Amino acid sequence: MTARIVSLSDILDSELMRSEVVTALKAGGIIAFPTDTVYGLGALKPYDSKLYELKGRDSSKACAYYVATMDDALSIGAILPEYFFGFASRFLPGTVTCIFPGKHDEKKIGVRFIAVPEMRTLFYKCGVPFVGTSANVSGAKTARSANDIEKTFGKSVDFIIDAGELSGVASTVLDFSLESVKILRQGQNIEAVVDYFKEKSISWTS
Image (cartoon, rainbow, N blue to C red; front, side):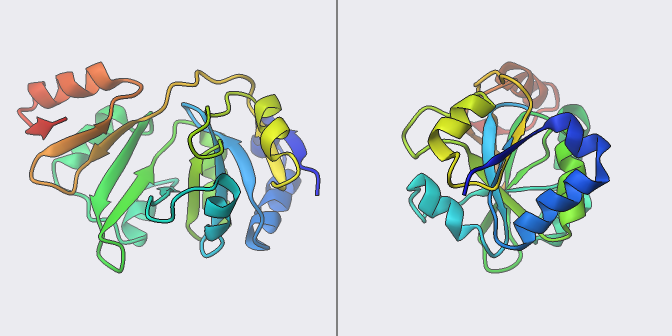
């Protein structure tokens, strides 16, 4: 298998292209896709185990769900604290990965609301949860371009969605499942996030 490289604009402009990508995902395929931080690898539930195999990722390290709307986050069992909605209105969609308590089998659920409308449209079209992780072999540098992905995963993924070179700065990771918000990773926009917590008197730790 050789990955097919398509542009991000094709995902927005071409219903046929979106359908082809969704069909590949529903058949158990993997895609490489742009976020608002770095490139990711993604698959649909229940095929996300393939992501762990492809990356050599420890199965105890959960991947995040990528969603189009807040309702999608609720539908996968995420419990969103009341104060989160004010935070979301300021920062989401955007460069933050949010960890929430889960209602069902998963005690914690990671969620990304990325600021890439073309991809949020694709997630919506899938109709089932989309799971993603950074596009790199575990422990290696994360891919910043379609060319990087092609070199590493070109024979292992179905599609590479090309949005040019990205910043390479990972998302900030916040755990909203605790009494105080815990900053698990300081990434993009961290200064503004901390300023917001101070402004709103939201308890946080790092």
